Amino acid sequence: MSDILAQKQLAKWREDPAQMIRDLFDTELDDWQKDVCDAFPKHQRIAMQACKGPGKTAVMAMLIWNFLLTRPHPKVVCTSITGANLQDGLWAELSKWQKRSKLLSEAFEWQKERIFLKEHPETWFASARTWPKDGNAEQQANTLAGIHADYVLFVLDEVGGIPDAVMVAAEAALSSGIETKILMAGNPTHRSGPLYRAVTTERHLWYVKEITGDPDDPKRAKRIDPNWARAQIEKYGADNPWVLVNVFGKFPPSSENTLVSPHDVEVAQRRNPPPDSYADAPVVLGIDVARYGMDRTVFTVREGPICYEQEVRRGWDTMQTVGYAVHLINKHRPDAVFVDEVGVGAAVVDRLRELGYPVIGVNASHASPDERYYNLRAYMWAKMAEWVKTVGCLPTEARDLARELTSVPYEFASNGKMKIKSKEELKKDGVPSPDLADSLALTFAYPVAPKARWRNNAELTQRVFTEYNPFPEV
Image 1 (cartoon, one colour):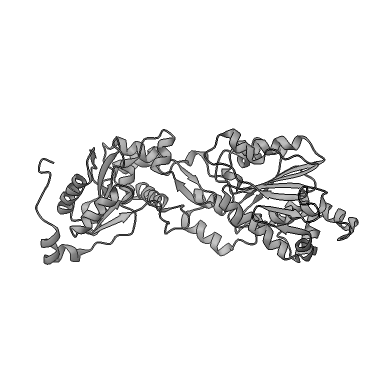
Image 2 (tube, rainbow, N blue to C red):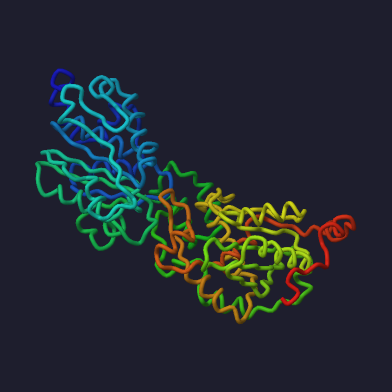
């Protein structure tokens, strides 16, 4: 390295990473990024608690280059919430900044999972590592195991969802060496784990930088569009969990880990609006089809604010489910029929379509139409929760439905989007399948307007809506 750059210059950049960034990349840092760069040479542990999109991955990449360039024979280990996130985020950012520097491009080799100094490829490097999501603590800890050197930097991106075992392995390496560091950043999506501990019970060990997109905060991240931030606050409210995480960069309150509270349900069960207040509301039928032997097939009819008594069946095959769906369609003349089409539900959707009924298959894993939510499942649950809290009328004796509505928690994915666990994930956690709540949630899958033409069209009425009831005893 002495042939490339004077040792005096390296020593200066080591103590002043912001100056190196200006010199090598010809770029200016935001104020909060300067704070992190100033703290980097002085602190062993640095944590960034960030809102959505402030530029945290960029500053992490630039500090990795600072460590690689200014320490002799350093070892840098990088990980993230997933391998794809690491490759698409931090690792790609490292490549971006290397290309902007002639010095780094000439001195270092960038590869898919490794960056190394060409003169010392075995001892002077950064590596990308992933940890097994389904592995035990020991297997996860092995992600960062075996790293020993005088100069070591562990970098954890999107740390909010990284398991404790990975952090334990990183901290173990801090006990030896001349200069060993941990640099981590993430959105405050989980009230547990390494980031949460760093900013609460272990704050005395960490330099913590809180990064906000609050449009009224003079120290806010300048890369966050203030108009966008104000729109989110105005639309959803400053105390909305999604706004807290993504706009303000704050942890959601622990008291709100479910979308619906017992009080919300009690109020919804007491509502009794006059019939003329929802005379023009659409009628929607939601059918959650059982996937396994002990699961329940649930039929839910909702007319605007009114959720009628749900119909529950066990052990039915798809043709029995289709038959009863036909009965309910004939009875209620819904404006839309939403059927969970995952698994055996696909056969129910196909048969109802074959019979000519207005049915829409719903796959909860599909994308949400609202950017706040991880997938369509989270979107449906959020719309249902909003309905319960504002206008929804729940059956007064629906104890099981009330339990399910108030027992399924939300969480945040690594991208800051709100997520509701799938049935399979809930079962692994020992939580019964919320079939009743899922059936009601299906009625919010897509917007529905009353289609009076269906009811007035004699040809369609004759063809689709009949008096046939395959279950006359019901």
